[in-house]
Amino acid sequence: MTNAACPIPERISLNYHLLHKAKVVDDLRHIIVDLSRACKYISYALQTTDAGLNATSNSFGEEQLKLDVLADDILRQYLCESGLTSCYISEEQQDVVELSSDAPYAVVFDPLDGSSLVDANFSIGTIIGIFGSAPVVGQTPRDMVGSLYALYGPRTILVYSTGDGVHEFVLNDVGEFVLLREFIGIGDDAKNYSPGNLRAVTDNAKYREALNHWLDKEMTLRYSGCMVADLHHILSKGQGIFTNVGGSKYPEGKLRLVFECGPFAYLIDQAGGKSSNGMQSILDLKITDIDQRTPLIIGSSNEVDRTVNALSL
Ligand code: FBP
Image (cartoon, rainbow, N blue to C red):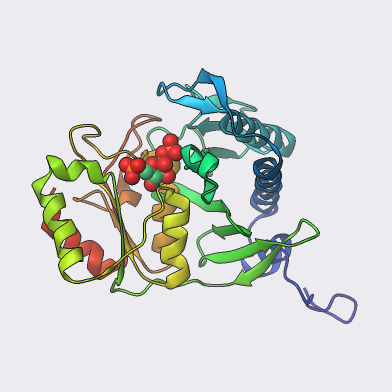
C-alpha cells in the first residue's frame, strides 16, 4: 500500500518486505518478525557473554556451551510470546516441545549452528524452518511455509524465503533488519567447494574421488566448519557446492534433516540451486525422527548432479 501518506520507505524493513513484497499472511509475518527479534538478541549475547562450557549436555551427548543453551532459551521465549507456535523441535531439546495446540505453526531450529567455533571467534548462525501444521514428523521439508537463518559474523545477516525468492537483510545500528538484497540466485556451475565431514574420505573412496576432482580442477576451497557461514557463502557468491556425506563415524553424514538440511534445501531451491541425499531431493525426504541425519550435497545444480553421480550413493 503506497500513497502520499505512506510512500515507499528509504530503508525496507523485514516487516515491510513480508507485508508488501512477500505478501505473506499476517500470522506468518508476525512469527518471522518475532524470530528475527530472537536472532537479534542471540547476536547481542554472542558479543557480551563468555563462551564457557556449561555443565549440561544435549540429547546427542554433546557438551552444551552456555551460548547454546542461551540461544535455545531466547528462541523459546519469542516463540511463546508469539502465541503462534503449536510446537517446536530444537537441536538442544530431546523431544518435541509442545506450546499451544491450536496455534498455526510448528517451528524447527538449530539455535547455534557451529557453536564449537564460537571460542575461535568464527562466524556461526541460527537455522530455522517453519511448518504450517503439526506434527512435523511425517512431513517433508517441501511442506515448510518458510525458512530463514541468521549469520553472526562481522555483520549480523538474516536471510529468509516464504516461497517467493530468497532475500537478505542486515542488522543496522539501531537494531533493525533492513533489506540488503532481494531474489538472490545461484548459478548452475560451481567454482567453490565446501567439503564437510572430510574425515569420511579415509573409508569412503567415492568421497575421496569427489574431493580429488575438485582439487584437480583447481576449484577454490571455502570451508569454515559452520554450515550457515558456508552455505551463506554460496548464496553470496551465487555459486558453489557444499557436501557432508557418510563415513564410519557418521554413516549418514553429520547433519540433521529436520533443523539443518531441510531449511537450507528449501532456501537453496528457492535461489535456483539444488540439494540431494545422493538419491533424491532433500526436500522430498520424509521426516521420520527429529534427529535423523542425512547425507547432503547442495548448491549449484550441475555440480550437485555431477557429485551425486560420482558418489553414486
Ligand atoms: P553443530 O550444530 O553441533 O555445531 O554441528 C553442525 C556443524 O557444526 C555444521 O555447522 C558444520 O557444517 C559441521 O558440523 C562441520 O562438520 P565437520 O567438522 O565434520 O566438517
